[in-house]
Length: 354
Image (tube, rainbow, N blue to C red; front, side, top):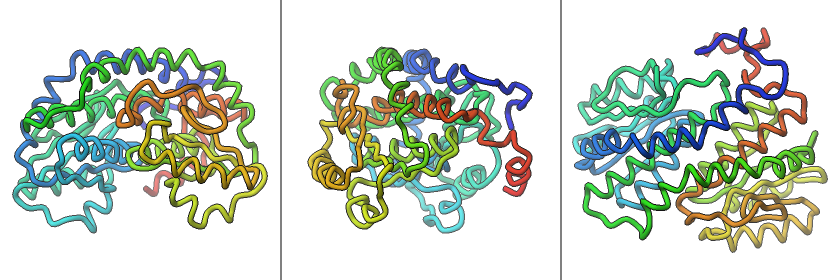
């Protein structure tokens, strides 16, 4: 563990809250100073026919969003692969491949093994990791934000997303492929958007008091939004210590609806400008017939307003409000969101095995 549990706090503000508030500054710093490292990574990967983005947990969600961005912008064959699957069941790497290995702290496990495997295959390897990381050096090493005391990462995740979208942007430009109109300007507006979203905290704190205390919560997405759905569900599991599921809106409509009951809630991270929004509206009508509410950031029965950015920015534009909702749900439930329960002897002992 990178920080001692002796830094444990007894109530609000927990470390998660303090770090969450730093995200506009983290994004502004990376968008001001991070283009050189992104360009270097793009030059390294530009000749690759296939790219594999590797990680686990939040880092896998960065990989999933990154795969969506690179495919959408540059048209390269990109796959996001969990670390263990990459090492034990993954592709036979060949000339023309490239690998991006993603980790918050560069710790042990299969993510480091993935880096070694790619290096042994002789393909270009880029690492994307936090400052003060233990990740071994690679062809190009990208850095994001400072270490977090809280194990429920917020700025570390959004910072990795910023660097990933910078790499996707630089790679597209290096290949001579036109970017969507206004792309750079919209990207530079992310810090101001995050600041405005932090101003919506009172609304999200009120929402949190109405989150289910016993019912099931399902977070739905589609396409690139699925990375956000998976990240939100993971953060809720870590911070609130509840079982929260992530699935696609289409998956929800094919079987899992049978398990829903009174007291359950569906959260959506699909914006109103998304290709999948019509399907979401159809499923929402089905949920209404079952008396199951659906809340969202820019759509659903509860909303904070439409997204100010195009659909492809949603991994960043839908993140901060859902983090605030998660944090205040944890506080409402009387849960310390900082430690993933590793401050409890049984969970600390369990962690020693993996």
